Length: 180
Image (cartoon, rainbow, N blue to C red; front, top):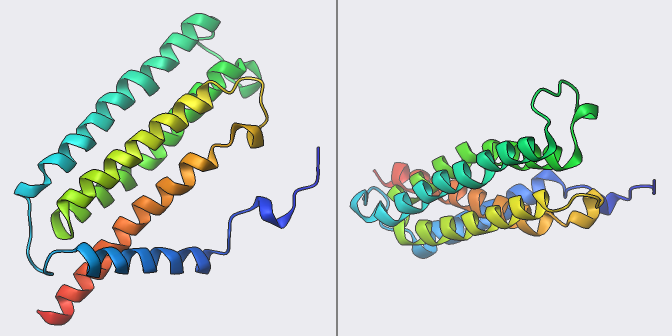
């Protein structure tokens, strides 16, 4: 195994936080509605995208695990060493989707209602597309090293999208609180 360099790890947290703050401010001030005005009715496309993600997750992430379990005849493995790589990758892709789901739903819906519903729908649709590509790539990467999977090309933009929406909502609420 090769030695890992500093470039292999994530950037410093304060740097990432600064980027999220900048993106959030740009969204809040640039495309946000007047703080304190809400657009629940405008959120229909956002809710549509979130619901499509749930259906896609059920069909492609959850059901794929059942298919891989049947294909590999591995139903009751208790240890990671007992699991074929194909099943491990399907479980990991599905598990990561579950880890991202609360942040996705919360950030997307809050941004939609408080900041900009159309932008929320567009960002959410992009996020869902990238997450689908992530899961497909991860499941199809049997026999490759983690680095060769190149999952960061999907996950990093997704982190930026969700955190930009979360930060924009926080900034928008701060702006509202300061003017109320």
